[in-house]
Length: 380
Ligand code: CAA
Image (tube, rainbow, N blue to C red):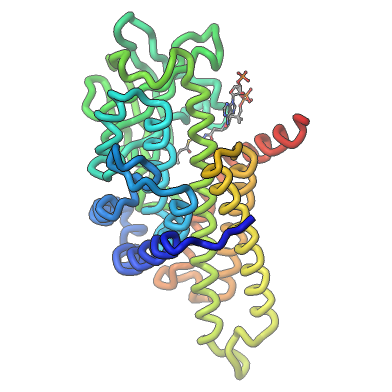
């Protein structure tokens, strides 16, 4: 397998790196502290084509491959994982879902605006009692002929208030189990659709996470994605790709913390020399570098599988499982290398440590990834 980047991929990676340093780094500490959504930054990400990277240019996207997308996710996540999750949900879950399974009319109406970053989207599967166990949807979409009536509550929704378009998974026919679930496109402002309070989170505090409440929301049938009962498979297929984006986010958080720790260890002196020259620190850096490189290969492999039309359920789950574990371990080690300074906000690594944790939880916990992996390896 050849992971040598093309000239275009190198340019995209560099453009993402430059953008992250010039536009995301300023104010990242304050946005984390005050839970401020990066509106200006997201607008610029749209202008650069980062909000619909894999979408066909016919629908306002950049028409790039998944590898270019993960390179961009990695670079942005090195600096600001809050901004990168906003981008990831919009690209992997919302744009990809609508482009792959939406009708021509849905693509014309929603995808063009989503892919250009004019508006952003949210993906609404989780519920108070259906996080990992996604088939247990309590939100109902009752079929009333030419429309559905939507009722229920969704939890922990990324882009919860900032989105304009929401892909909502709901149960239409309980007797059919997961085959009775549908995916509906909901617009902000539809009567009966309320946005709940913002969650006060440990990490990725710049992104806005809310619960959503649906009270007799009338949803036209033309807003259903795919055939009746396709909603659960829609969610699973979409999440399989989303996991590659989150794996790239985790990789970026780990790599960002490692880069800072390495630089710091060559500047900070103790016991008469730079701390990098103490084996206790040098060995930590060696482990971090090795683990990050292994995670990177898994992430690139999953992205390449998707680009080549191969199955990517297994490689995406492995990439997410491992990269998120590396993100957690690496950021903890980075804080350790920084010592007392690591515990202080201005050195960034404590934020990265807090941000890393969510990569082991959203778009399927580590335990869910192990379920997907073990089922895949045991089925033959
Ligand atoms: N692609 C296509 N079909 C799939 C699929 C996939 N990746 N995964 C499952 N399916 C199909 C199965 O084939 C099966 O269909 P058939 O009977 O026709 O074969 C059907 O879906 C049911 O599958 P399972 O029996 O495997 O279902 P399960 O109840 O055992 O659950 C699971 C499987 C993998 C645990 C799933 O529930 C899951 O992924 N849970 C985690 C959900 C999740 O990731 N939540 C995160 C919320 S989104 C988020 O975090 C976004 C954000 O804001 C950042």
